[in-house]
Length: 224
Image (tube, rainbow, N blue to C red):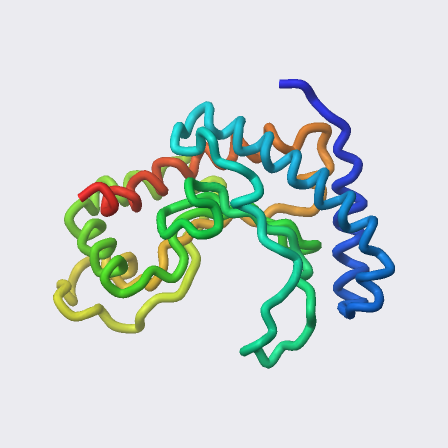
């Protein structure tokens, strides 16, 4: 793969820092040209990331970056937080992009809070119940994925969990901590300088590769 100069990522982090301190329409309008330039460069690299990942995950063939990246504008209609702009860049990498209900890859760029993530966020109850049964019925496979050194050296499970076992499941199960999960997420926090390398895309693609078995397991339920 041809390596490209990614100095723009330093500028992107600087822009997001300044946006966090000046989260208002006047400032954003004054700096809109810089935002547009950085967003275009970001989208170019995320598309390269998608295409690289498609070499080991064929579900990503043909996925368009425009379906994956989030807008910078916040929906403030029903939120007590009336700040108009997100202070991060994010991309959901999967068939269907941002709208996918499936296990996916998620790239988050935010000063001091960047990361590579995966799994299923906030599944609705019917899907959540299916996932819990899938884990219970195939617990050995699930645990082996979590214990794989390439996975556990990078990722840890995150997300909300119930305090007690849900109805219909063995309260004495030694694997209750997995059954009680309300969402199935794996996260790898990274420092800002992770993206300062000559080609962060290759590094991210390699790290995301170790999330694929986790996503594949979660996506079994969509094939039933």
